[in-house]
Length: 163
Image (cartoon, rainbow, N blue to C red):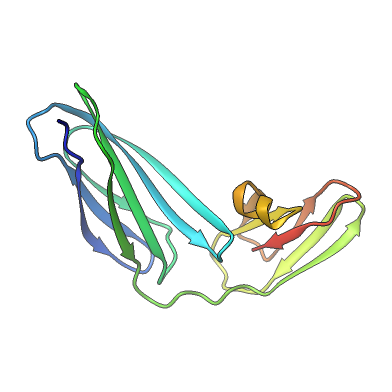
């Protein structure tokens, strides 16, 4: 039986998490697949996937948000097949930034100007869809470091926006 990998949180800060991966077996490991999940608002779960080569590994994931819960899951790729999943949860330190105040205004039938308040020098994600279900499951999205963006949409549809 292939055991799941051990994920150990080495350290964390306002904007990063460092963790190590190892196996408690003599089975040869060729690498790991790691997913980092987090949720924005209550509508959108985000994921970052890392493909890591080798048997032992210490990884640092940066550009995270302060005071945000993250779930790290990992499985090992071995000579006998894939291992079961391991999970670990960690909340970054610091103070979570205030939610931006979004304003969306139709420019014409196919363009919406979105603008918001918030800190500078960060990346904003803009998510939009025609229903709450689509906003949660599979929204259109884009990112920017600006405080405004023009989004192209389909005519004759109502949209929900989240930044």
